[in-house]
Image 1 (cartoon, one colour):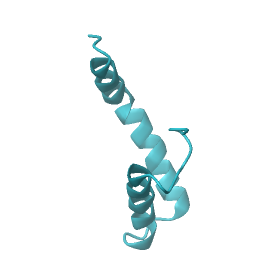
Image 2 (cartoon, rainbow, N blue to C red; image 1 turned 180 degrees about the vertical axis):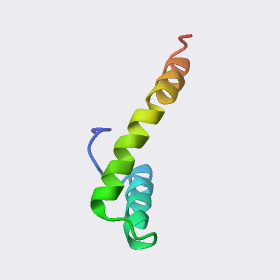
Image 3 (tube, one colour; image 1 turned 90 degrees about the horizontal axis):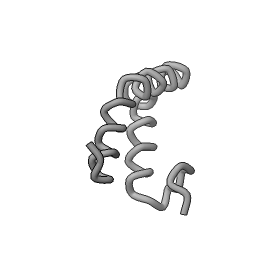
Image 4 (tube, rainbow, N blue to C red; image 1 turned 30 degrees about the horizontal axis):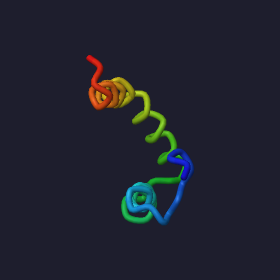
Length: 60
């Protein structure tokens, strides 16, 4: 099992795909706008996600 490859048999991957699809289907985003949003999201959330991952491993 590869965590970094899309596997639509996994519930959390289904959620991610559904949310991304909703931006286009329900909210009128273009695919380009969705990917720009994802890039911005990665930039803004990196620190918080890194901190959460470190806490899960017992680091401070």
